[in-house]
Image (cartoon, rainbow, N blue to C red; front, side, top):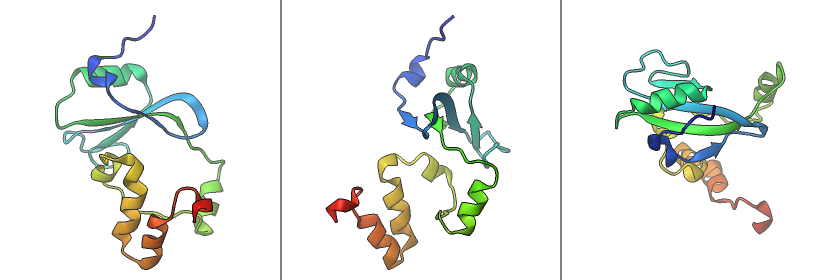
Length: 132
């Protein structure tokens, strides 16, 4: 039996979460009533379409959801090694950043918020570096 997508979810954007299993569903759900979220306070990560549908049927205006297809994954110890090599830049997570109204501009927003010249320069570089 095919699940019917509730009207509440029909206009949600489906984000690409990464290259691994592009058919896999994940979603982030925020609500002020989630005190011990499995990601952080007020934020849960889920993977079940049935749970997402159930959740959407009782949605209130102060709740948010972001839906993803696929994910990024690492082999055991790979991410730790990449972090030791400074291959990643970290930034404190907030609900406002997770549900930023313009996800395509989030990277630039975070870089500019860091304030340092090197981050401002990176924020202003073109997506295609051959344009530089």
